[in-house]
Image 1 (cartoon, rainbow, N blue to C red):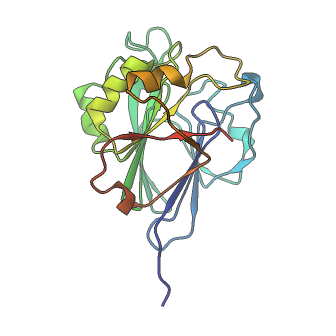
Image 2 (tube, one colour):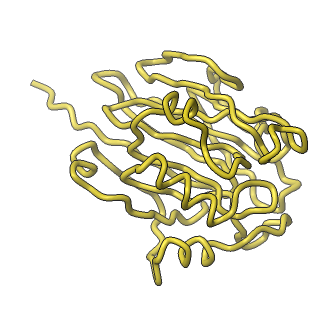
Length: 225
């Protein structure tokens, strides 16, 4: 008898680009890529292949679709989807705090697989989530949230939204890293706001549902690949 071990692997490549490898139920592995960027950022564009490709908005640093190999199922807007046993929900949000008048709209995504829910907040610029958005998102296990300010929320707003959603794991994204041509705030300011003095970086997050049971919110810093 074959024994099934559930797991989920998450890697970060800078900005809002993540690769998630999951194995829902008894299905084969499913690769999910979120927000591939182009070379104009100064970062190396990774060679990735996907079954599902999520694009939160059509800015050059989030929608380099051609860089992703395979024939992925593309989702680039609000709605509810089931693909290869993975449940995905796109939720509207604003890229700024003036109802999209400056930078337009973005799509936040929730990803349900292996009884774990991930929420990717895109380039959200709202100072806080609305009650409707919180209801649409629901309970979150892993939250991917921008912290670098300028084009998105900064550390203080990120802390406020974390308190709204109360996830077990927080993965910061969209902050200043070496070679990035944009000028964003570094991760240190976010850690200070969160009351964290020092935190080890890891190459990838390998997590199972049992790792999340009873856990309070913790911050995980992923090294960009």
